Image (tube, rainbow, N blue to C red; front, side, top):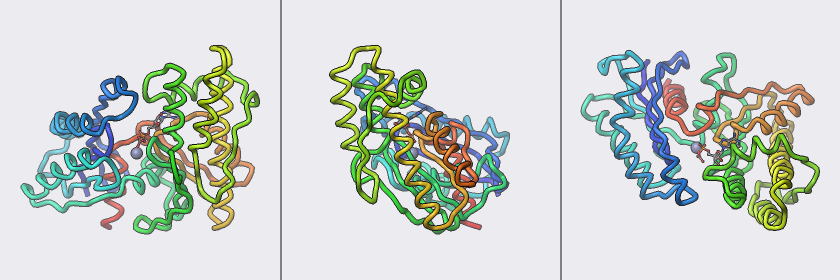
Length: 308
Ligand code: KG4
Ligand code: ZN
């Protein structure tokens, strides 16, 4: 089975051609981050217009890179939720158009569920059940993947997402949006015990108090101490989310752990989770950065598994 997959839930326009052997035959992702950086975050109206401008180019590029003929495509997969309304509408309308014109089945895929299973793209040996941390600029959740059609959310942020905090703190430090990757690099150079990040005492994720804590410190420190704040924050968040991840894995007796979402690109986070997994004898699976952040490959792969 060969699927043309479309992802337009936020700011990246991504189209991929994937097959039922979990292989990504080609993927084209068009990022217009620089234009959003001027505003310090994604502007929904601008994102929707960008998708409209880029989607045909992304689809034609992905198809020609894959070497697959249009007639060889067996189905269309598309992100239908959650996401920015205008952005989703561009992708779903485009997908419906092809599906109708070519008489192909349309598979609607949940973006968060796709992040939760993205690790399967490059790890042939993993299959559900497994526990996944989805951590991005819009979401922070711990999701139990019982099978490809049955997901249970155990933890979900009640306010900000982890990536939102990193982006906001980085912005206050003077770095362009999105600043998560910059803070991740700075964190490795700083003293992580310099500031003690507060840990919310609730049975769920919450990041707004952490954001306020970091912003208040940022206002008072000199340039050189910023790397210590980055270290305290990035290691603090990594420990916070991974402790809950391990706790839930033990509670439901799952031994396979994965991560997805843009913040899963963080080397600090990967290092912290990997260490905790080793201590517990859990298997930890991660994937390339291009499949962690928003991408169409994960939409196509989950779409295939949801139809078979
Ligand atoms: O999944 P994603 O591309 O978009 C959504 O939010 O859905 O995630 C973007 C987030 C941003 O907050 C960005 O700062 C963060 O991922 N990010 C990182 C890294 N690369 C991207 N955070 C920490 N370390 C990184 N290396
Ligand atoms: Zn995402």
